[in-house]
Length: 105
Image 1 (tube, helix red, strand yellow):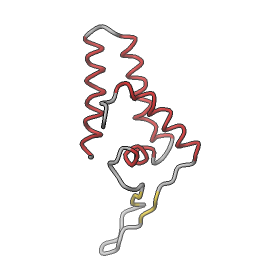
Image 2: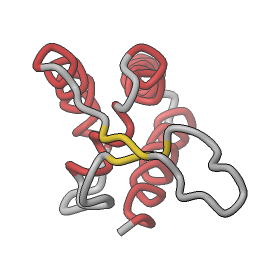
Image 3: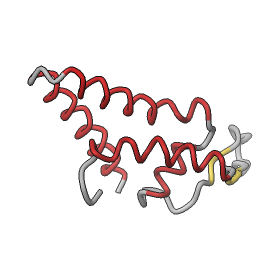
Image 4: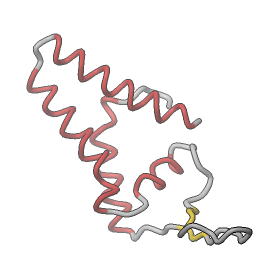
Protein backbone atom coordinates (compact mmCIF):
# COMPACT_ATOMS: atom_id res chain seq x y z
CA UNK A 1 0.00 0.00 0.00
CA UNK A 2 2.84 2.43 0.68
CA UNK A 3 3.60 2.44 -3.03
CA UNK A 4 0.05 3.72 -3.65
CA UNK A 5 1.06 7.07 -2.16
CA UNK A 6 4.12 7.14 -4.41
CA UNK A 7 1.92 6.26 -7.38
CA UNK A 8 -0.49 9.06 -6.50
CA UNK A 9 2.30 11.60 -6.19
CA UNK A 10 3.86 10.39 -9.44
CA UNK A 11 0.49 10.48 -11.21
CA UNK A 12 -0.18 14.02 -9.98
CA UNK A 13 3.23 15.20 -11.18
CA UNK A 14 2.82 13.43 -14.52
CA UNK A 15 -0.55 15.09 -15.03
CA UNK A 16 1.00 18.47 -14.26
CA UNK A 17 3.80 17.77 -16.77
CA UNK A 18 1.19 16.87 -19.39
CA UNK A 19 -0.69 20.11 -18.71
CA UNK A 20 2.58 22.03 -19.12
CA UNK A 21 3.46 20.25 -22.36
CA UNK A 22 -0.02 20.94 -23.74
CA UNK A 23 0.24 24.62 -22.82
CA UNK A 24 -2.71 24.42 -20.43
CA UNK A 25 -1.14 26.86 -18.01
CA UNK A 26 -4.27 27.87 -16.09
CA UNK A 27 -5.09 24.23 -15.35
CA UNK A 28 -1.46 23.59 -14.44
CA UNK A 29 -1.49 26.50 -11.99
CA UNK A 30 -4.67 25.15 -10.42
CA UNK A 31 -3.31 21.59 -10.14
CA UNK A 32 0.04 22.69 -8.76
CA UNK A 33 -1.59 24.99 -6.21
CA UNK A 34 -3.78 22.17 -4.94
CA UNK A 35 -0.82 19.81 -4.89
CA UNK A 36 1.23 22.26 -2.82
CA UNK A 37 -1.61 22.87 -0.39
CA UNK A 38 -1.81 19.15 0.29
CA UNK A 39 1.97 18.69 0.47
CA UNK A 40 2.37 21.60 2.90
CA UNK A 41 -0.60 20.86 5.18
CA UNK A 42 1.64 18.96 7.62
CA UNK A 43 3.54 22.20 8.29
CA UNK A 44 0.33 23.70 9.69
CA UNK A 45 -1.35 20.57 11.08
CA UNK A 46 1.06 18.14 12.69
CA UNK A 47 0.05 14.60 11.79
CA UNK A 48 -1.92 15.51 8.68
CA UNK A 49 0.26 13.23 6.58
CA UNK A 50 -0.41 10.35 8.97
CA UNK A 51 -4.14 11.05 8.79
CA UNK A 52 -4.14 10.86 4.97
CA UNK A 53 -2.02 7.72 4.95
CA UNK A 54 -4.36 6.07 7.46
CA UNK A 55 -7.37 7.20 5.44
CA UNK A 56 -5.83 5.74 2.27
CA UNK A 57 -5.07 2.42 4.01
CA UNK A 58 -1.28 2.80 4.15
CA UNK A 59 -1.21 2.80 7.98
CA UNK A 60 -3.64 1.25 10.44
CA UNK A 61 -3.01 3.85 13.17
CA UNK A 62 -1.59 7.31 13.66
CA UNK A 63 0.95 6.15 16.24
CA UNK A 64 4.39 7.70 15.94
CA UNK A 65 7.61 7.71 17.95
CA UNK A 66 8.02 10.74 20.19
CA UNK A 67 11.80 10.69 20.39
CA UNK A 68 14.94 8.66 20.10
CA UNK A 69 15.06 5.88 22.71
CA UNK A 70 18.06 5.35 24.94
CA UNK A 71 20.17 2.34 23.98
CA UNK A 72 18.31 -0.81 24.99
CA UNK A 73 15.15 1.08 25.90
CA UNK A 74 11.82 0.82 24.13
CA UNK A 75 10.84 3.88 22.12
CA UNK A 76 8.11 6.09 23.49
CA UNK A 77 5.15 6.44 21.19
CA UNK A 78 2.05 8.58 21.01
CA UNK A 79 -1.02 8.49 18.84
CA UNK A 80 -1.60 11.71 16.94
CA UNK A 81 -5.16 12.91 17.21
CA UNK A 82 -6.56 15.66 15.06
CA UNK A 83 -9.33 17.98 16.15
CA UNK A 84 -12.52 18.14 14.11
CA UNK A 85 -11.34 21.46 12.64
CA UNK A 86 -7.99 19.97 11.65
CA UNK A 87 -9.67 16.96 10.01
CA UNK A 88 -11.99 19.31 8.13
CA UNK A 89 -9.02 21.32 6.82
CA UNK A 90 -7.10 18.23 5.72
CA UNK A 91 -10.20 16.78 4.06
CA UNK A 92 -10.89 20.10 2.32
CA UNK A 93 -7.39 20.20 0.84
CA UNK A 94 -7.43 16.51 -0.07
CA UNK A 95 -10.82 16.83 -1.80
CA UNK A 96 -9.45 19.60 -4.01
CA UNK A 97 -6.68 17.27 -5.18
CA UNK A 98 -9.06 14.44 -6.15
CA UNK A 99 -9.28 15.25 -9.88
CA UNK A 100 -5.51 14.77 -10.14
CA UNK A 101 -5.29 11.43 -8.31
CA UNK A 102 -5.51 7.96 -9.78
CA UNK A 103 -8.97 6.45 -9.34
CA UNK A 104 -9.23 3.49 -6.99
CA UNK A 105 -6.03 4.12 -5.03
